[in-house]
Amino acid sequence: MEFNMKQWIADCISSPVKKAMPILSFPGVQLTGHSVDEMVRDGHLQAMCIEECFRLYR
Image 1: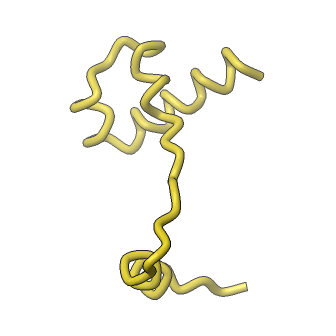
Image 2 (image 1 turned 120 degrees about the vertical axis):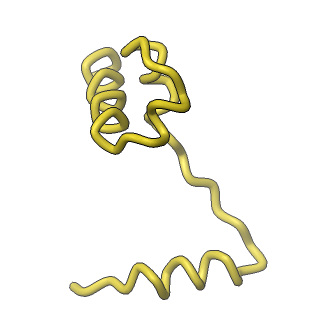
């Protein structure tokens, strides 16, 4: 199945009904000891935060 991300983003922005998007990496910041600023700029660090949440809450 092919998914057009640009179209999806445009549809989300133009939709009158807004949807929530959970961000799991923010709780992981405390677990890894990094700052939010570091986390939002580094995709690898975001993945590490999510892994830490998984390890803690599985």
